[in-house]
Length: 435
Image (tube, one colour):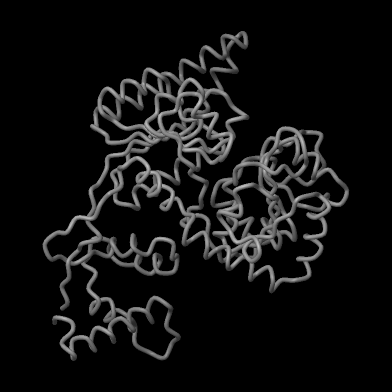
């Protein structure tokens, strides 16, 4: 049996508290980030406040006036923020990771700082659309934003200690290719679809006659909007969005804008861009300033700048399934290599000087769980290793021995293991590898 130093698998584990928003597009982002911290070997306490959303709504519905409703809802938000602080203090946490819309107050942030607990804020929204972040900005150790340019300068003017660009991402556990049943394909599939909330620019765009056949998925579309909103105009869970992306020929991805042009060239890239790509699905996306830094716009994404270009692109690529597949495949490889939540969390920890440096230990064998972590982003390998006991030692000869004999076609993970074993045997014969 080969023994080798486990010098890349044992890392300093941080204690991280992740309070989620009660509702909205930032909620899944918080959940995906928490999972990424765990994938990196950190100890995570997830405070899932999604369950409190009904109480938050009740506070608003039960009040006799708008002022009373704001008071009740604000009181609940303060209570949840205090709960976050007490949880972090009790656990002697290293980091509290807030996301846009997570319950948080200035006193809570100051209490955490006094206790030596670091705080980070990942604002995965447009700062021009909201202002509640301004009195909070100076209290975080690091303010992460999905925007560039003037937005970052505005955050700095609000007193932020450190501002870092941290774009959105995909979670390959959810955003991945799916084997669809006939029922799922009938329910979620279409020639052209769009997933997202009914922002003004989208409502105006999709009301145009040339786009009336696009299947719309999402929430907050006006009641007067045309027929064709799927699933009762509700927000889809991550698993459902992946089903839509994978069963759609052409995914249209239009960024939100409250006013101005139908296709607004903004300063951020939405999560949908990464999620569609991670699913191995084809998309047409409107031009955004940072896109060229994240993707190859000649081979990975089809980018349009106007409603006319969108119409022409849909008509053009509807006739080219092979080209759609080529774009989708290259975009998927890009996301898995550079744009997962694990990549983002690693980047954030580096920015804060909290990255987990490897530590060399005595000779030890990695576990199957370590192989799952090392295979992050490769869905096929992760699924293969998940079939084994996570805590079991990862011994190559034992893994090879479990590959069934016979004439059936071997899977890619099985072929990789056999190839590694052949190389190992060669190394032993040559004296390059210790038995």
